[in-house]
Image 1 (cartoon, rainbow, N blue to C red):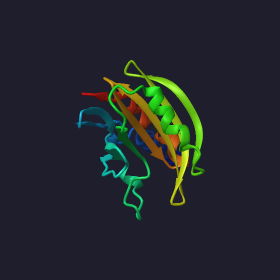
Image 2 (cartoon, rainbow, N blue to C red; image 1 turned 45 degrees about the vertical axis):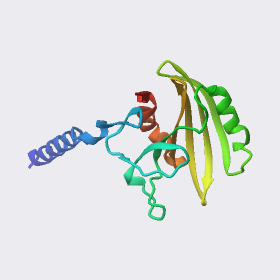
Image 3 (cartoon, helix red, strand yellow; image 1 turned 45 degrees about the horizontal axis):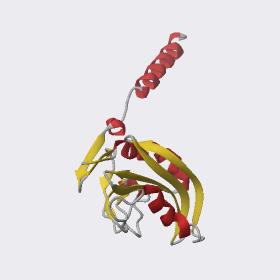
Length: 178
């Protein structure tokens, strides 16, 4: 009789240990975007998103976060090519963009940083924005490559932004002009 409890505990332990070995192969899979003169890698579960964003080249988003009313993902990355002339100074374009941006009470700055992206100086601006009653945390990475300025705009609900940082970094760190 005393063998049964030991056998049950052993079997339960094996089941628990075996379940820890099961993994979701999609977690580490990626896809590649290579069109419109740009290249980047993104999360394998994300999809190309239709974007109406100003100056958008392309966008990708998490289909599991699509808003039922707007039909747009709440977690996304949009690649923009600002309407500035070729060889415009990156710092000047960035400063002009944000000169009045934060005058709008719908936009709250969080942080700014200078970073390096593919051996190029890049400017990072993180902020909270409110649109149609919904808040999003945004991170805009401004980079100039070959005289062209691009903005990698990452967004997610504030309570999920930190969790998405890995997905954003995959795109940011792989971004290149072709």
